[in-house]
Image (cartoon, rainbow, N blue to C red; front, side):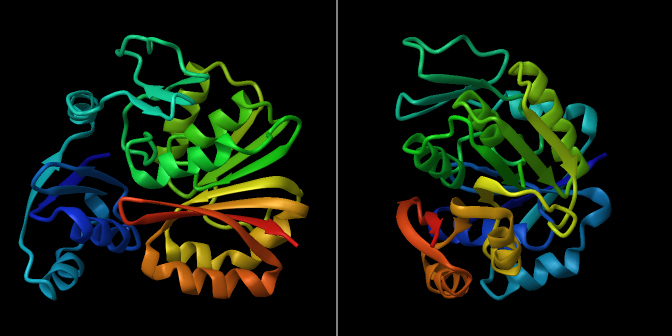
Length: 272
């Protein structure tokens, strides 16, 4: 599959807002450069009118480039750097040398289109929330797994069962590659765009997606959690916190903790 790379002259909070808005209309990967934001979307899904309407209100212009699938690894390999989260979890590609000293958990992620390499604040903040939880013997569900990084970490931390879904075939295939690279045995991943066919109960649910999807599936996420279960959410901007809390509270979720980084929030809830 070929992708369109859209280069937008935006940084900082403007770029963060655009990531949230573009995610909601089908853009699947982002690269935050020093002076620009590059957003990627499958060639067949690109609609110039939608993009121009979104950018036009802010007077922002863009350029576009066709990225052939066979060139994608080279694009990522030239930009992908190792990530270390609090000396707790290291994320690197197979062409990077091991961390010295070794972090508690060392995850190998093949740099592909799927979101979740640890570079973005939403992923690293989810990892920081996970750091202080016990996963030993727990049943875990990863909603919108991306590269599979959080599912892989959950298994490494001792989870007994890890189920993961993503709506995007590319992400599922990338996750399968990453599961193999990290020698996982307990993570199961499949393609799905909703939670309606899932009836199992879980102790911990991870959802690093975007605000609109989190709001839409709040009731389903509660249905999947056992009493006392933990819900970790990210992909939330500070301006979205009020509506997330308003949606979560009626379903019996109690906010326990939050982390803010680079104008993004990660929230930890417990089922009351």
